Image (cartoon, rainbow, N blue to C red; front, side):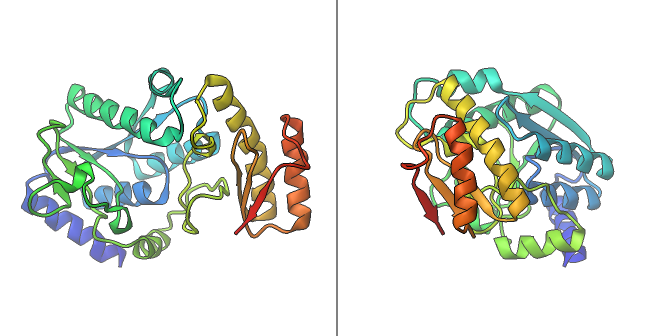
Amino acid sequence: MITEAVREVREFSRRAGIDKKRILVLFSGGKDSSLTLYLLRKAGLNVSALTFFHRWSWEEPLRWAMGFTQELGVEHYLVDITDGLLREVTGRKGPVCINCKKVMLWNAKWFALNNGFDVLAKGDNANDKVIGALLDQCEGDIRLCGLPRMGIPFFRPLIKYTAEEIEALAEEAGIRPYRMYEHSRRRQWREGCPLQYIDREEIVTPALMDLTYQVNVEVSGLARKRRIRMSVRVPSFEVMCWGCDGEILREVREIISKFGGNEGEASARKT
């Protein structure tokens, strides 16, 4: 499968005229963006990686991502978006992710244009395709979108692959990103950053962002040790877990109590 995927990327790039262009991959260190970077590199394209982080980002996946690009021999840029994220989210209601993606997208555009890149690449797959989304408003093959509004085309080499196919491709390529054992929104590994667990409709403040990070760093340590998937919403302290038992829930409630959460009132959603 992986050999065929590399061949398809190489042939499509030639047909689309981007095989000689400088391509910048928006690289989170997750499975989709890692596979995108891997395929483009193996296809012989001129590719670099761009990773955004902020002071609430997971540290371990960032270190893994840096090691991955080093192994591939790919130039890797790291950009701190803490200040821009604070300006965008402070005083607004959650979820933070919508505004964070906006910050990253526009920073990626200007970083690419100011540093001589011709194309931005993303790890979107077939399960991410939402009708009406910005990148689906493109003519022709949806793998390459030339968007006048952005001023730079987007290349999505995985957009026709399902999440299950990507799992198989990544496994064949030996791509195993570092996991924080987050609960996530689906059973597939869709990890992000701790700030996604700020309660909806909550007014976002730097103190709330700090608390959400601190709680979930400790909870992820327990989840990794127990090999289950778990996260905690803040400030409600709702426990979300795939595979929890009573003993694990008691342990997580002990963690919550250290941060001012009421052990007796903290709700648990076992899924």
